[in-house]
Image 1 (cartoon, rainbow, N blue to C red):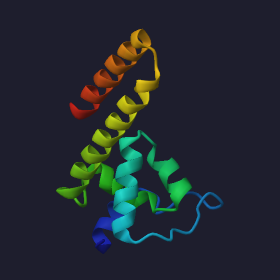
Image 2: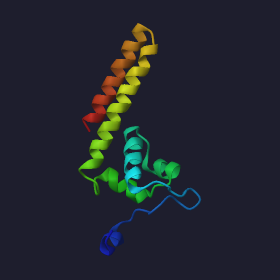
Image 3: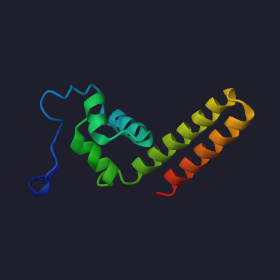
Image 4: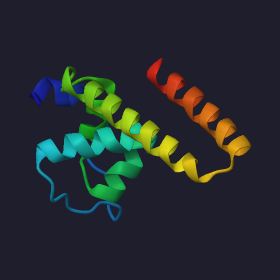
Length: 115
């Protein structure tokens, strides 16, 4: 990050003191973790708290400031995976409730992919 960019960037570099934890993941793993959590609708502050990834890095990924080509593809991949997992889980339901649940899952997935 350049010096002039960091002076205009008002985001905090990490969660508030006492809420952070050391991150033991490589940068590549961090990108995948953020994509997975973002696909599951977890807030950036919660990702930073749970995993210890720099919140500024998380916000940059989500805003498309870095990894513009790769990150949206990873998020889409994890959303499809979540969609498939949720549909598989409906197989344990009875026919009527299973159909309704599958329709709701389908609508939510369509809303997420239209973003």
